Amino acid sequence: MLTLLNLLSAIALLIWGTHIVRTGILRVYGSHLRKVLSNNISKRPMAFAAGIGVTALVQSSNATALLVTSFVAQGLMALTPALAIMLGADVGTALMARVLTFDLSWLSPLLIFLGVIFFLSRKQTRAGQLGRVGIGLGLMLLALELIVAAATPITQEQGIRVLFASLTGDLILDALVGALFALISYSSLAAVLLTAMLTGAGLISLPAAIGLVIGANIGSGILAFLTSSLQTPAGRRVALGSLLYKLIGLLLVMPFLTPLANWLDSLNWRPEELVIGFHVLYNSLRCLLMLPTVGLM
Figure: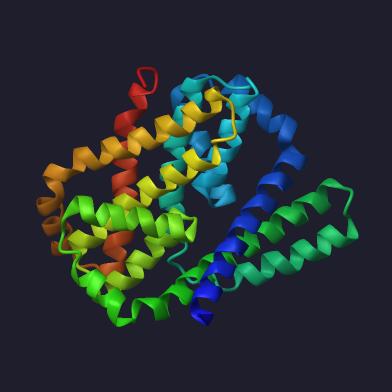
């Protein structure tokens, strides 16, 4: 019971950190961000790059989805660049997963410490609001660590081990479980990091890990669609288009699962590095392939 409570509290902390970052950025750069995203990102490559940059900043493709759907709902952005931004967000979250495999245990307390100092001493200034953003980023990093740590004891339970043993490389089944991971943890980033940890521990095979990663991406799309349910129809179309792109990616990779897993397995990398490497490769290739089709979507 305590393990479950720790997991739920870590997820709540991640949601709260995402909210703090999003509101802090909007308070400081809201008008500028709206102008940049609505006026200057008419070209798809620029919108794609903006999606990568914003997601790297807020460390959550779901947070980027909330920003973009709200802009589209308010009529500040057209649907085509919004979809390009969402594709860039998928690449951004994959790159952040790679960054978070490094030892960044020092960064979270540093961001929280400096953020609190700036926020309390200069609350009504831009520096104070940037301190608020720093607090949110620190809480998000801490929450991701806590989610993985809280989920580790759960993975040692016999019933969970039986579940992992059933993941034998059936892409559809593995993707469903991966989507469930992302929904439970409220973060595809946390789900991918957990998958990498489980693969490194030898609890799941590489083909199963590939399915879990693809499913985690789909889970983030479902989360974005659910959180956009209160938006206008225009805002909901952004989240729906992003989700459809993730489902199309699943269909495209299905024929190549076995040769892809064999190729990755031939690389002299640690299992967890293979999972993170696939995540970056898959999202980058999928999104670059889909970018020319955003007008059609």
